[in-house]
Length: 483
Image (cartoon, rainbow, N blue to C red; front, side, top):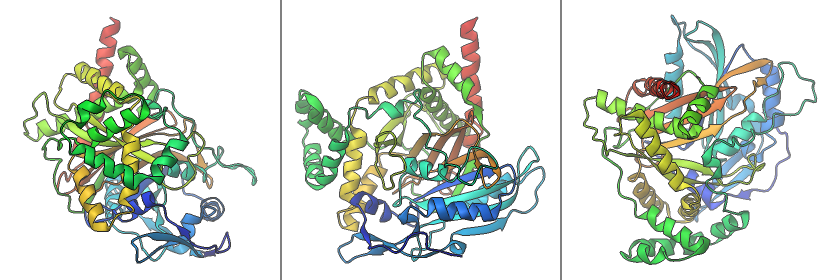
């Protein structure tokens, strides 16, 4: 089926930030955002294709090929699109009691398979016969979208635009709007001082500004002098020096050189109300609880493998932070920065670990490291690819994982006559980072997802299954506090 929803337009120059993500693909890590959508029954494929045609393809990037020029830049070239190239139908083999592992293997294989560069950089695999651990037969969609099209926050809004609020809506039903910000999620408040004008100014002057930051990073006395500077410019420059002067991350078995063979796993949903209740009992946020569980699960996994994990062992995760204004989530492109969150994986005591996570989260508030990182991404897209690789690898040495936490809608959604039961996603890792942690809330539940490179951890289930026990420890401690 050839779709030409919008007439061909003149090609559009790709921004330097988007170009950076386009050029970041490597044999070890492909820059794709991967999502798995689980439905209670098979979709009406005619309605599904119509939703893709009318709601997804209205965004020109989903019907545009990428063209490269001799300067190292790239362009979007709108073109006709054959949906048969982008919607693939497949089926899992029968399995007892379920075949979830077969689905996870398929997701892992697709996570390491490049998209066709001669076509628009997205694809959806509709997977039949997905048998869950509960014995229910579902249908899933594995979505792959290249990061140069948009970041995770924008793509959440785009994917939600395919859905409706009822199983059989009227023909003129409006698409589901993006989720409202979760007031209990501190990631959404980290960048409140940043204005659109500030982001625009940084984008326009990234080359000069980042050269200045690297010069400052070479000065042993720069940080001390800059701490006395007042206002946003001073704080931003201090944060730039901190970001560029980070020590390499702890050497654990999760830190190494990925080879490109991916494995994925995801948990069953935890009740969001219970997480909020535990957070309230400890005087913390939902994010504090979730980050503490991630740290506890990773520390427990390493100890179970016989590794030495002293109390001061840390793991740095790069966390994407949205830099868009509210309501701009569906504007495509990349408008986010990265905040380095250092997880105290060596602290075994759940309460002490939670308190330390909360303290570190509080330290990040009001900072500008996400904006600095976005500026660096802009520079990467404007530099020769060899230089981009060197700078990218420099930052990869500073972290072990990429971690993303996205709040989704808290009411059930429907697509082509089927109810969305679960949704999980994975953001790409770059350079020598081989671990991706994803947390997504939907319809009263929170799920953890993990992608690992085989060279570092061939069985992500060994980590995933430790998330719930870490949460249950906090539940028990919260109950004991009430006694």
